[in-house]
Each structure stands twice: as C-alpha cells, then as structure tokens.
Image 1 (cartoon, chains in turn cyan, blue):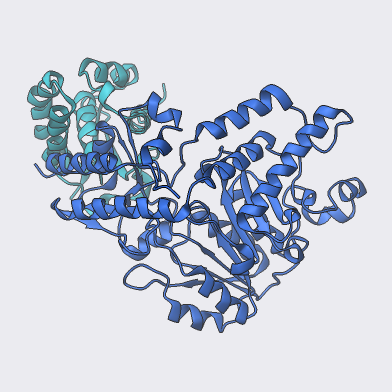
Image 2 (image 1 turned 180 degrees about the vertical axis):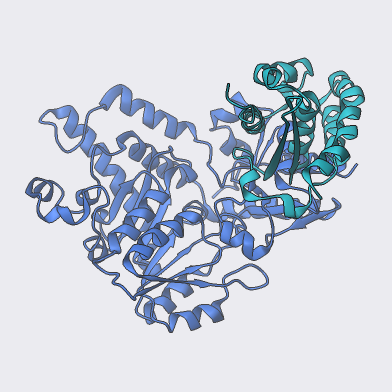
Length: 149
Length: 405
C-alpha cells in the first residue's frame, strides 16, 4: 500500500468525524460520554500497515507509540497526514487533529492553534497532563512539516 | 499489641485530607509522607538549618549531630554493624550508580562477569551496562520461571560461571514478587561473589537485616519508605565500601588531588561529596522512627487482605489479564485489559481519580520477556483501605466497559 492509497482511504473517515463526531464530543456532558465517542474515532481510521510504521515516523512525547506520515501536494500546496497509535485515546485525539488540519496550506498550518480548537470542543479539562504533552508533541511535529519560508 | 487500625494510620497523612477524592495506588512510584516526616523536615529548616561537618559554630554542630543521628537510625533500621557503613545518596538509583562505577577497576577487571536477573529495574541494569561495556566486564542474566519469579535452578548454573558481583532486587517493582533473597545471597556467597540487593521496594515491606542476610550491599530510596524525595541509602560492608571509587570525586584523580584525599578519605564522608541532603536524611530518620511504632506483621496482614480482596474482585471483571502472582507478593499488581493499551486503561482510571502507573515501569527487559507492551500497575500501601480497593475495581469495570463498547 502506498501513502497516497492510505490517504485516500483515510479522507472519508476524517470527513465523517469532522461533520458528525466533533459535534457529539462537544455536546457530551460527562467524561464517560466524551471518551465513548473518542474511543470510536480511532476505529474509523484505516490501520496503517505494519511495514509502513518506520522508526523515524515515531512521535516522541507520547506514552504509547504513535506514527505520523506526511504528504505534501506541492502543486496545490496542501498538506495531508496519516497516523496510527497503539493506544485508542491517542488515536482518537489524533483523528480529531487530522480532520482539522488535513488539506491545509502551509500558511494555514503554521497559523493553526490546536489548544484553541480543543478548548472549543470542551476537551481540555478531560485530558491529563501527559496526554496534553503528547498532543503538543504531535502538533509540533505536524507544524514542522511546513516548508520553511 | 492492639490490632492495626488503618484509619488511625491514614489520618496521619495530610495528603488524604487535602485530596479526599483520590484513590492513590501508585505507591511503588512514591509514597505519601506522614505528618511526623513533614514536621521533622520543617523543624530542621525552622530551627536548626546549618551546614554539616564544617561550621565552627554551635548551629552547625547541632545540624551535624542531627544528620549523624539520622545515619545511626538508618544503620539500626537495616541492622548495619556500624553507622559508617551507611552512605547517604540521592536515592537508590544514585547508590546503584555509585556501586557500579565504584567497583570498576578496583574489583571488576576485564573478562570478569556480573550476574543480574531478568526482572531488574533499569537502575540495576544500565549503570552496570555503561561501565561493563567500557571495562570489558560481561553481564549474565538469570531467566524467570513461568510464574515470573527468578529461576533458581538457572541461577545456580550461572553462579558456576563465577561472577564477581551478583545484583538483584528484593522485590520486583513491576510484579511485586518477593525474591528469596536470603537463599540467593547464600548461594552467591558460596560461589564467591559480592552481593548487591536493590531494596527500593523491599525496605518498606520488611525491615532488612543486612547482617543476617550477609549481603555486601543493600540500597533503597527514602521516598518509597514514607520519607522525603532526594534521599537514599547505600549500605555496604566496610571492606567493600573502601573499594569503591567515589563517583563524584573524580575517580582515579583522587590520588593526585591531596586536598580531596584529605577531605574525603574516611568513610562514610569519602562517598558523600558536596553538601548532603541534610533535611532529607532527618526526614528519612523520622519516617523510620514513625514506622517502627507499628507492627510490620500487622501491616503485612493488612496489605495481604487488600490484595486478596483486589484479586477476588478482578476475577469478576471480564478481559483482565493479571501478570502478578497473589502469593509472595509485597502489594503490587500488574495487569492488562486484554487487547487494550495500558496507557488507555490508566487514563480511564485517571478520569475516575484512581492513580496508577502504566507503561513498562523502567523494566523493559522484563516486558520483552513477558511479551507485553506494558502493564497497568496498582501498588498498595498500608494506608490504603478496602474502600480504595473497591473504588479501583469499580473504576476498572467502567474502563473495561468503555474500552470494549
């Protein structure tokens, strides 16, 4: 499987998350409901084949292993990402991040404020410090994919 | 002696009054401090604060006296032959580093062997590895039995290779299994080895008697014994402490720097470079005095009861894999929810204010042996109650329900 094929399989899932699940998470009143939705998000993404999970794709700062792949459509200046994680919560949170950033231009990506987005989803109070650190690490990794100006 | 009263014991920990909603089951990482320890540290800073061993004034002499009394109280706790055999370090890890570094050249020569076990904490692996690689010393590893205890048959066979040093933990920090340390020391002695016990989890479970064990080194941390962080103990027999090259004095340079030589030439000071953690040592001593007011057997019985309840509750939750044995267990239960990552389980417990640790617990070789990506570790202390056990079980049930929905 190529990265392009994986991306093509991932996009519909991300679209569904963006259109439906984000609202569900935002509306969920207690932690159980939020986590129930979060747990399902990762399951919606197609798994990354083991062969593609190369060590250089590992994101440091997560308690569980997580892999991030990047594809830059230079002609249209659009960035796309694919990820996988051993842990469901991380995968769910990353799915939220990806549905927000996939398809962004370099300029949009550089401006993207993950913390603000998670605030809007009313998620931050439900994330532990270490989980937050892992997210920040992932957000930095994603931003680092922007070509330098 | 009256029965152990867990509520009376627990009341002495201000933490639980400040954080009444939390179930704290991360005691193998660090324990809470009783008021007696907090008071001892505070009072030292408020009334006696001065540097030790070097002031001309009475305050310094008082601080020195308190610090040396702390050494005597630690020596009594482990039943050392002499208080000079107690070296204060920043923790068990620092003590292990001092021993591994200190024995190279003086005792361990190229081609020598040392023997470790498969269930060691990284602190009892990496310091050896670091120096062994550089000095051509070979590391052998004792495998485990199917019950995840040290394989004593294999141990005896590996002792035949005549290791110079045998180093193992008293209690596994991941599984809680109590190792047969007395037997292991005796066998290692018979094979002519120097013996080192990592008592990080052991010193709180059971008062170690280093003379009866006849081990050459025993190390532990204060903060896992109701004491402050940043203080630890390196017990060593005088003959072996004298062989240790100080890790903080510049190694072999010590012979050429006469100033250093004259300042640190005597035990225990030779191995305590710089201003020691005076308040930490006093706090540790207070923890020991306080703990000794309680009966160890009664505390162990209380913890056994908690474990029994926990194990029986776990049987009723579907999909729980338990890695720890219920017997010969000091109060640590490593478990997994089948097919789930331990970080997810721990996060769902965290949401319910149940504090546990997840991951590989600084024991990666053990986890590769167990073929597990990690585990959730619930570790119990004497201040934990049956209510804590029940709340943790309910939280686990909820976590499993959310994960497997």
